[in-house]
Length: 263
Image 1: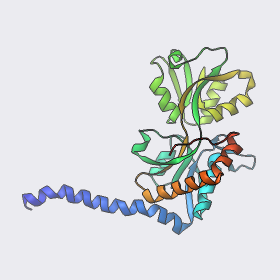
Image 2 (image 1 turned 45 degrees about the horizontal axis):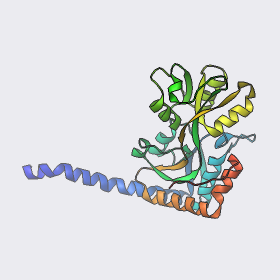
Image 3 (image 1 turned 90 degrees about the horizontal axis):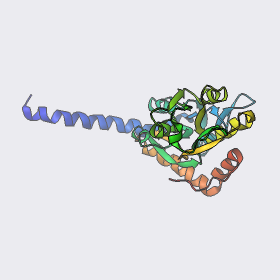
Image 4 (image 1 turned 45 degrees about the vertical axis):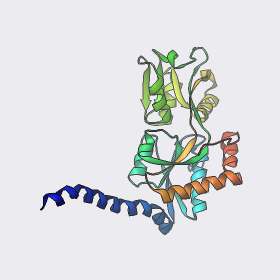
């Protein structure tokens, strides 16, 4: 083999890899349309976005959104329960085609997943008993706080909490809330809807919001680099904004208008 040819081998190899990867990415939407099934990761422990209802079937805003996307695509829906820690791996390994599971956009996540336009409002905050004075991240020093591992609130809390904060990470939202309710942790970091549900069912806690960690609207997660599928999902979301469907979902499940959402 000549030295000249040897020098070009890495470039040739990279070109072949790109050529092989492009059809695989482009085939996701085609595969959905061919099989007539859309596999979507949804939450089942995060009311009112996703939970198991009295009929033992998934319900919630994210569940309805997943069904709406499937309906607009003209395919059947396959709802795949997922946790905060495994929903993106499910997407990366092809177990699901989309993630509609209170997924917030972060720079770290954007390295491995593409995000649609936002489809629903959401914000994250720290909650604790009224008797405890917590007004800012600095006040978390020496306190214990529960949070769901791998969630946006976990990422944000880790950024702002003082080193002496005891951050207790749990694998799902139910365990995170249970830790606070049982007194295992003094505080909890979670979304406003989950906190509202927690306080409604546990009035004796005397819990209240202490401070906002992050405004974090929800986005649909799409396999990285899959432009065809991303464009399709964005078109459905944009149409749903115009025809009032997103506002309808927000009013029904959150009790408030959808408001301004980023693209």
